Length: 449
Image 1 (cartoon, one colour):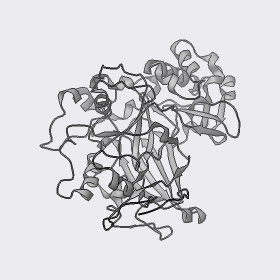
Image 2: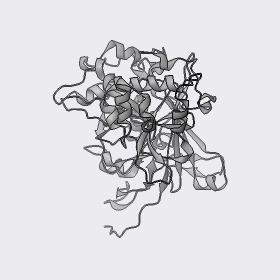
Image 3: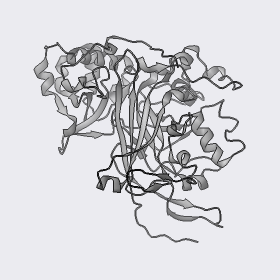
């Protein structure tokens, strides 16, 4: 698929290297071309949280070197003294861009100026507690992968896997903001109503068919105004950045409750995001054309169409998902590779998601999080959920390292996502990891029919 770089600048220069040596190591997620943002505090301390930038295996504490910035970069740096990224995001992408440009110059190899101040402001990631990066204003989860929509639909509607609206509207549901948690935080098996096909009535019990979903999260920075929909051509001005996202799902709860209004308790018990937010600007070299629609598919309605967006509105982000069971950890065995999918295959662009979200006049707020929906590809090795991999649990998956089998997740299972962007002529960048371990359901007294 054609790569279409948008608004490249000096921070994307592939020749740049940093005086922070770990940023120059092959395979590093955070070279100087990335400079992602995170919220953190020193591990084991009671210090206030603040925001920093990733460089190699270090975090630069922006608040510890405020005197090095001026103009818009200083405004952005001041915002980084807050415990979340919201204040920075609300300033708009121009301010964040000014800060990234200043950081790129300061951290560039050969620049000796202010080296002592910057070195003192570096904290090893191994000694930092990474926190939820954004105070979530609202959470919406889309359904943008036509491959996932078709695979999931085929399990329930073999003769008509895609509903008639799918190719006209970016389907989504509104989730719960306070269920968003940072990578590594607690994920507990939820309780819910379960009804097997041979049961006359449901029971209330811990969910049995727990699943993960490989997704990309998108954060809104610049808000929109109530009653003023965001045009597709301007949507990227509202997008601050992206992170990995795992929308944990209780499939048995979902199958019973979703009709007729869609997902509810099966989805809102936990959604994990990676602690690092990679800015839209850093991803400019990895902008690509939106996936071509199949012959005979309808064109997007006019309010969802923009020619420039079709040419460069998708992102080439590879996401690898792995599973490590409790037995694997005990045996120090390698994780089992689940899938490798890519966001460039999504049917709907990120701008179309933003535009559709606001198309009825509702305002977007700083800190809104939008999930892409499960990112699945056309092949068996690119399926972004166990629902698809095991055909709804009908075909168990064997884990080579221990011989265990899985249809859905069991207690103690750890799911990890790793995202990476690569393109010839540019330095690869990464997203860090999004990981979570499924804990047993909390015991409670209940009665069944």
